[in-house]
Image (cartoon, rainbow, N blue to C red; front, side, top):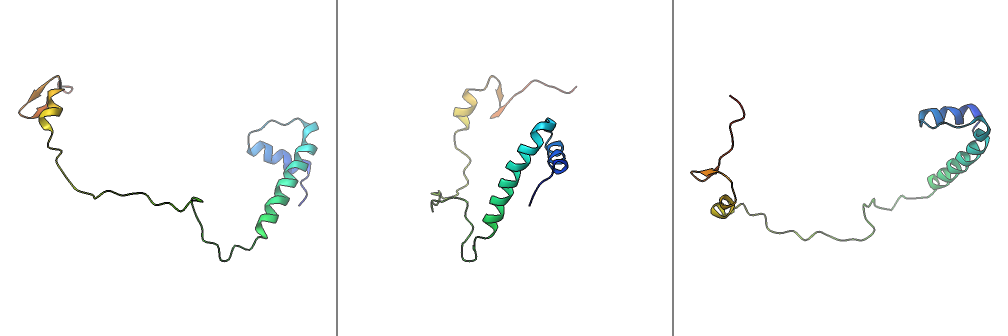
Length: 95
C-alpha cells in the first residue's frame, strides 16, 4: 500500500499534527513501512493460540468474603470531632 501526499496530509489533519509540505513525502514512507509491518502481522497463524492479558499465568490469592460490621464503632467515633448516639454529627448545610 502506497500513501500519497494527500492521504498523509489527511492523516495528519485527523491526528491534529501540523506537518510542513516538505515532510509529507518522508512521513508517507514511514507510514507505509508501518502499514507493511502490520500486514505481516496479519499473516501469522493464531488459530490455536488463546488470548491472554498477561504472559505470566498467575492467579490472585482471594480471601473469604465475609460481611462484618467492623465491631470498632467506639474506636472510629473516638476520632470524630462531633458525635451523638453512636453517629458522627456534622454542621447543618441546608436550611
